[in-house]
Image (cartoon, rainbow, N blue to C red; front, side):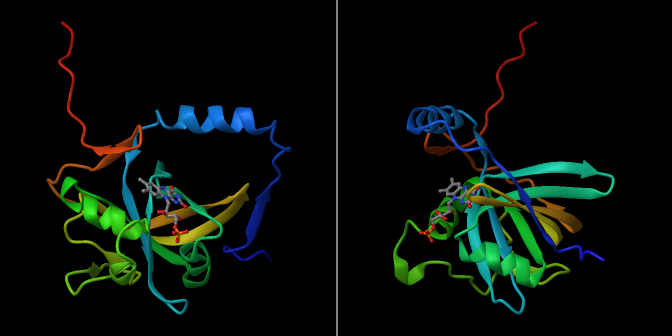
Length: 181
Ligand SMILES: Cc1cc2nc3c(=O)[nH]c(=O)nc-3n(C[C@H](O)[C@H](O)[C@H](O)COP(=O)(O)O)c2cc1C
């Protein structure tokens, strides 16, 4: 019988050249998204990575999906640890986002401080996050360069903090438009 951590593969037809790839990247720059920090801990060790590829899938049961570059150490670690947490970063967490994207000083890269907590799976939870979701990794789908991971949410918490967002190659925060009456 197939185990719940089996790796499935989505066969993608070959790309249609560098031009469409460029247009794809330019268009996706318009897809503003919440900045999250995906973390994991377990036999493969403790890892974290800045990720915008996260979406809610279902509330019954609580389920979400993340997309990780297959070459990233965190992707292998989540497969081995079979768990991960999604921390939706707050506007206070911009330096955390940069650190876990690997764009700051290498000596402080991927540092988990003593203030980090955990919920049920042991995956690191950032106390300043706007929300955190602790997940069992349930399904894995290889799609091109990325690994899609479906997580069953086993615990969740949210604060009053404002969400950090990323779009048009910049960090920001959302501000409501006046509703036209
Ligand atoms: C705002 C932002 C969003 C990102 N979103 C993703 C993502 O959804 N999935 C992913 O695998 N990497 C994402 N990355 C990239 C990783 O965080 C990291 O920068 C990249 O894997 C390079 O790491 P390396 O220097 O270890 O190769 C994002 C980076 C930034 C700054």
